[in-house]
Length: 63
Image (cartoon, rainbow, N blue to C red):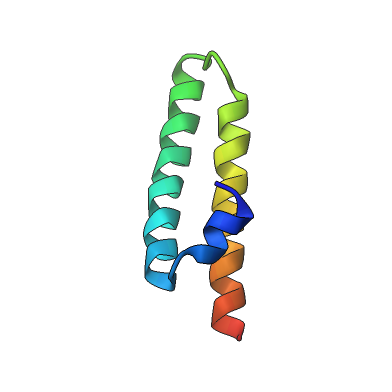
């Protein structure tokens, strides 16, 4: 998810997406622990998206 897409979302949508991506991140990590993923860079991509969403939520709360 790109920063421009994230900035267009409302706070409620951001919170929903954050929960969704956190669950996906946990699932990917567990799957990779059990049997290595074909593309382990997926974990990195999802982790960074979680960070982008959390940062945007924090920025909006501070404004």
